[in-house]
Length: 250
Length: 91
Image (cartoon, rainbow over all chains, first blue to last red; front, side, top):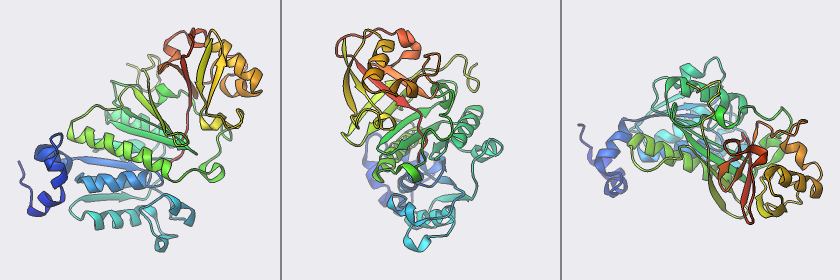
């Protein structure tokens, strides 16, 4: 069993003191491999906190460059980063927070063709995308690879999150067999959103991913956590596997 | 049967921006009809032409998915909590 350095003991002292984590589970985090797919409103805070928590290897996927309109919520970036690839600036910022970790940035967009290769080798995946096609592709890749997927999505002031455990819980296709038709749901650019809302959901995703890697706590498995920022309403609803799901049915 | 219905943000433009409303119905199907009467256009957002719930919208009665209960025929009691949770993809 590897020994902590003095710096690691200090850096992770608040985790090590916590009965639910301790040194043993902190070591699991340091040995863990998490993939954050999308580095926008969800992925920025999620990757920040996985880095702070000491997840040893963090994959970062995003195909975009930083835009001024991102800075209302995508807190990994600064004004000086405008026009630069998000994945490069994210890796640099996260390395500054925790240089001990191994960051694997890839400037890519998720497609049905590349999703399987992107998730390979990771212990947990965070779905921080902003489109249905990518989410369905990521879901299928994670189900086929047997990798837990921490899903969240937002719209204006609403958020949803669930943790998909392949073969055990409903997958994303079980939950939503079809996406809305194109044009029915405006994008964030057209509809607007409260900048803090994705951060709330992202931290829920990061919490779930930490619990998956460290092996403690109860997951949002078979449940969807729904949040509305107007009245701070949280609720959990029960969800079940679709026996006819084209992705995960036995 | 008066039930409490939680309206997601994408549908609040139809309900005058109300997130929580009280509506009437002995079943989920009747509830949707009541909502359509009070907020025209509501049913079309939830149901297709044949009246079946669209496959990107889920309805829960007391936190249980009606697809695994009796669907639109799921019976309702006074003060039941009905939540409409559509697929969203923002991030």
